[in-house]
Amino acid sequence: MITISENAQKYLLSLLSREPIGTQIRVFILHPGTNNAECGLAFLHQDEIEDQVDIQLKYNKFFVYINKELISYLKDSEINLVTDQISSQLTFKAPYAKTNYEIKPSSLTEKIQKFLSIEINSQLAMHGGQVHFIKLDKYGTAIIRFSGGCNGCSMIGSTVKEIVEKKLLSKFPEIKKVSDETEHTRGAHSFY
Image (cartoon, rainbow, N blue to C red; front, side, top):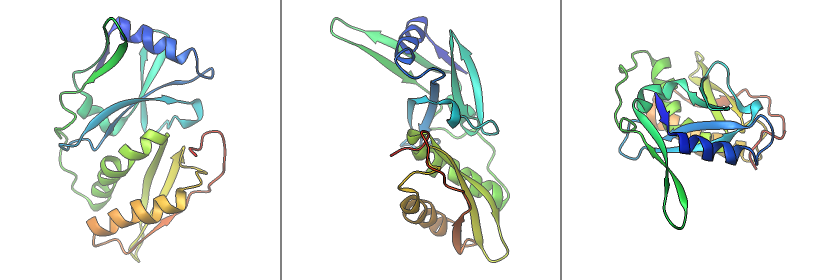
């Protein structure tokens, strides 16, 4: 799925050696399946790994984690290290990042989950966080839950109202309001 050159793996391993023990790499895509798609890498701490959501890829002495909803966008991806006389730089080529090959979601639940994955989680991934759609109740309330760096973040109230709720209400007329049922506890995993 993602080919990481030997030099890029050595470089990533050297970066990881300066981080706390157990730190790994997360690959993410902002706005996947759109013309604005952008790929990136971020450090990932053990408590930010989502077992039901993330898949693990093993490389030379480290792991890369990817949200499983992004797999089709990362087909034939390559991460290389380009070195010149002055510096070294990682390059990330994902030829399918802007193309959506997945089957169009059919149920409202699938549409909401896909929307959150593409429009919201791609942004939250930069901070090690995610939002999950739990259900839509009979009153039109979308129940959501945050995880990773969003859990306990000091900006969560603003994120819910100004980002998640506004976007969901404008996209889905069936949703009347959004309710966050996360038990927010501050911790080292939270982004501040």
